[in-house]
Length: 459
Image (cartoon, rainbow, N blue to C red; front, top):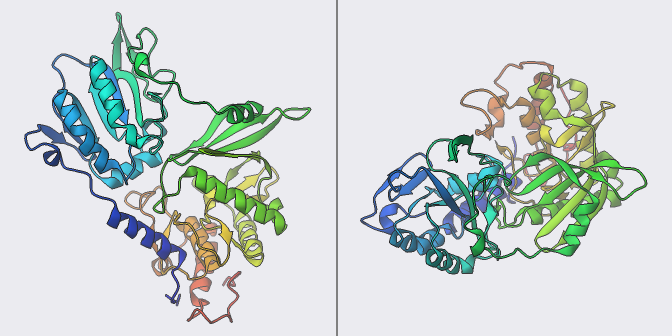
């Protein structure tokens, strides 16, 4: 059996960090706490306070972004101002929803839209008072991607949109309310009445010069903590495709307080470790780096391929792919490196059908503390990060991603229960055999070193 041991396992560290955060993060206030007389309604995720002005179906929307640590304070600070102005507003009901929102789980465009204020007619006194009230939270909250900033690094953004439905009436025409584009934050034909209340955002010349060398033409993935982009490298004699990975300042804060920039700095440190230990050929090459306050960007070799997760979801995952990924894990572990979030999505199959590892935000040197980042939470959780890598990789092969009631949202997995299922294909049979060997070969105490923890034999 896997031993509980005396040291915290990676999963236990993540759980402990989450519990510690829950202990110090105050719950969001109920509307009655903000004002005992406030009229409100509630839905699954929102409290809506006050009433919309009759007959007004569109206008300005203000977004106040928050973090789990400051959300209650921000709401209690702003509520008297919003209620005194007679404005309708809504805010997320709980910290868990706020975390999911900021992580991008409800869509990249929704990040930071924690408090929404409906402002049919701009009022100079109200806007200046609101900005003053948010002054203490400058540079403390995530950006709202598809809304215009008020500037000054305030957690305050705006757009023009409909209050009900999905269409705007502009002139004599109905147009779609495009909520997923910064370009359409103020639609064509609408005068930006809030621009006069904004301050220019400071622009870092070093960041601008760096990004001009690598123009982006496609977003590959966007989350609250970082974005991954397909770009061109213009620094050589010929153009070449590259991947830009950018960390977002104060976006999707982890339980230990780290943000996307911190995670990319950890990945950068891991890339340097890979080079020192001659493991760098097992991952896309690191080509260039920008590391300045509030911005970290990695420029990586573009690998023309798809992840093992994509292969699984499209029915193209083969045992040979799994064997190659397993061999990579073995080589990382032999060199004293763990991946931390070993899963199908973090292995790419290139055009030559070779496999390489990607995404080292949770990786590190064996013996160091691991960050509380996990896609899966397994029971029992191995004490050794190498065994944890193996267990998490096998779970990612077996996980029923698209099964109703046990899909993406259900990431807590009982390893022993996995062995009770019948394999659905050769890949799952491969994973079940190795999981059985991993569980049976687990050391019974932290001092038992008789078992080869890098590669448990398949049955």
